[in-house]
Length: 424
Image 1 (spheres, rainbow, N blue to C red):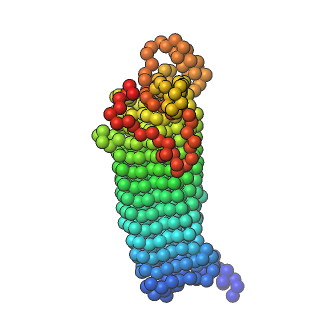
Image 2 (cartoon, rainbow, N blue to C red; image 1 turned 45 degrees about the vertical axis):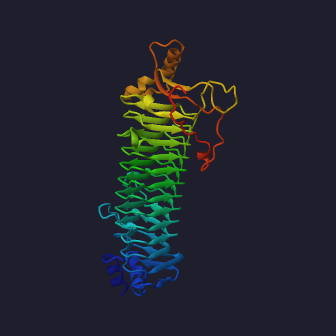
Image 3 (cartoon, one colour; image 1 turned 120 degrees about the vertical axis):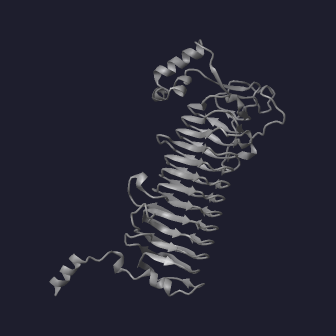
């Protein structure tokens, strides 16, 4: 008898989830509008919610997807899922195997742990939902082969708040306008937050650490990026914050530190679509700000530039001085403040000397800050071989380093004077 049982186990092995009671059975037994509080333990998934119910696991309930598909699917509106641990999804990128797959409206997904799944939480045509205080970890794999931590697709007016994300690929919004991404902590990811055709969204008070790239705003107009911490974005194309083909964006009160490039932005197509950079701390980056496709159209007010190898660079044909710099703090400013009004007596001007070599010849960037180029740059500044390029002119630089604190920098930002000219 024992031999026969052993043979059956070899031929028909039990999956891990098959040994657990069915979570779907508990859901099916819960009436619409009812509350399910399962006993502590592990239950077998996958499971589907198809009506308005509340599930409260109290932090003591695990749903194991058995390595197949998505662990929990929500095809309902007005449901609440909290206090669950969801694990062991399938591994298909094509099927978007996910910890929680949501396609309804006005649901709340709160205080859950999603780990050991390919994708974390996925919204598809889902509006007015709340994703709050969830802990999300992808399954171990190469970073590019992991799934997104949170994925919004054609989903509007959602709040993604206070989530703890680590070792996942991206938090991504695709064709998803008017969402709020607030107060999340994101670590060790590829793109921390990536917007694609998702206008009128707000990215606020998030903390991003050790991501290949911090925040990317792509083809998304009128996006507000405020009071975020972005540290250590040092990938090959590492950028703290990037605006690409996006107009009327605002970056205000952010702290961007120790990145390959602090802020990257291209020029707006129309003058009315300018990007506003105000009251940010941009420090200890290889390049503070990099503007490319340069036609001007950026407004740069009240920022603090500290200890960057190069504060600002320009790439592309056009008039770099069409950008409006005013009231910024520059740690290499060499003027005085004789009347003690806090504004430098002479404009701050930034010139490109030998830097033009690596700015104009991409292959030469490998030698940037090398002893040879540093020596050549010193000699050219001492006795210029040719007229240097004027990169920017700030007519009213801050003389004293602002007392910068995240969330309050807008108080020290200097606004442009009305009808002012470059010679003010």
